[in-house]
Length: 78
Image (cartoon, rainbow, N blue to C red; front, side, top):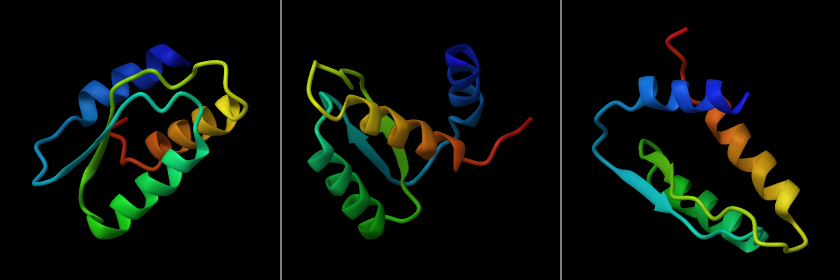
């Protein structure tokens, strides 16, 4: 599954006017609220994540589920 997400990310990487960059989430649910606010403020922006999603905190699964769900919402070329 990871390989498919990586491949889709590369193929879906089209030039956008705006990007939302986030990294070092470390299982923090408050970061999801910040991402959602940024998406409301910039609805056409592409979300780009830079890693460090997990760090032994309580909400690692929820953060990973959220990020995977965001990827699924991106239109696919398959």
